[in-house]
Image 1: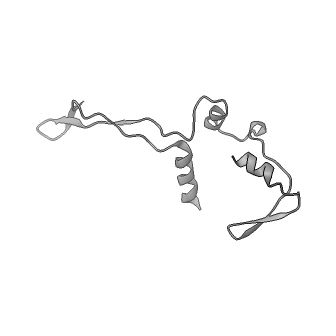
Image 2: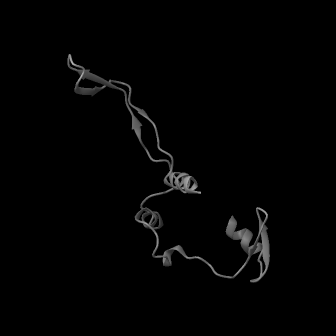
Image 3: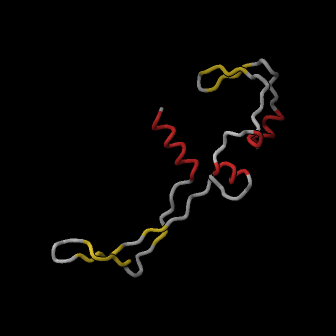
Length: 104
């Protein structure tokens, strides 16, 4: 959809547009992620179609019974039957975005 809009609304090199109150000059350069050597392993796996960084990460939560001795020290733990439930983590891109915004 975005590619079609770009083809239907071309802007010449050197022209400007405004985004969030800031004037952006079009320099004609295009970024090709396949030629970039600065990507991490997850980004390369995403480009190769091995994973999808935009899907939630499947995870599960479960309640546990803990056993302690008379002094209160941990002895063992066993999962409670029937308490396992799906509790997905946010997609990787959202985790990266949150971490990036912490530093801003």
